[in-house]
Image 1 (cartoon, rainbow, N blue to C red):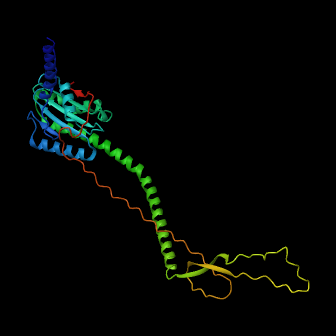
Image 2: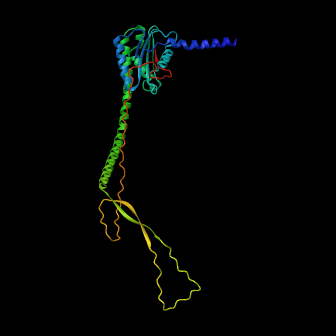
Length: 321
């Protein structure tokens, strides 16, 4: 018995989750999906061109979808599921907009992503549907091209103005920083050039240097140890008148070690004990100039595909008044 209950529950969950997915129209990867067939080819081309340009500049996606029926779902629920399953807008900015027209149910719904609800607000969308008379459009089925394209252009213009103001503020903020960084970089380059020039000059001074051998006294070693003559107790004392001979002198040996030194001038050897000393100039190795790798330009997609944006909406929007 428990086995059949588990099977029934699993089947129910599968049916509940699969029915809304089949009810949603398939994404064609464009900015206009005219499944109901109410728009002309020129209007569809204009919408696709406008949407492609907007996404290239800001990452926002404004999509028009027309269907005949929502297959039992409410228009708001259908729009909500379609918006999130297609992933309209940028994943981080959540800046997608959906314009849904349902012809047989004579209804419509416009909703926006969570990231631009303060820009493309519900009040703004209410004014758009009022200005382009969406109620009359779905009731009488006329002027679809003019009214849908007009509403689409109004929403795109609103997003264009918003992202243009953001880019302008960013440029004004970053310009002084760029000037400051350029000044620091120029100073570093000048300092490196000066150090390299100084090192080259020091290297030229050391060219043609000669080796000077300077004697260095290490130590004095006695060949024989001085030994006092042994005194015998039984030896009689010498008379005072007898001449005393001086003790023998022990010869010594002086060892010198030759140490090479560098000098830039010839040294004249003389018999005097004065030693010519010259301090060598220490040359620091040239500092290598840092090289910055050019940043590769980022490519942005120009066509919309299923889940390309990944934007989300928590619901809301504007429907028929």
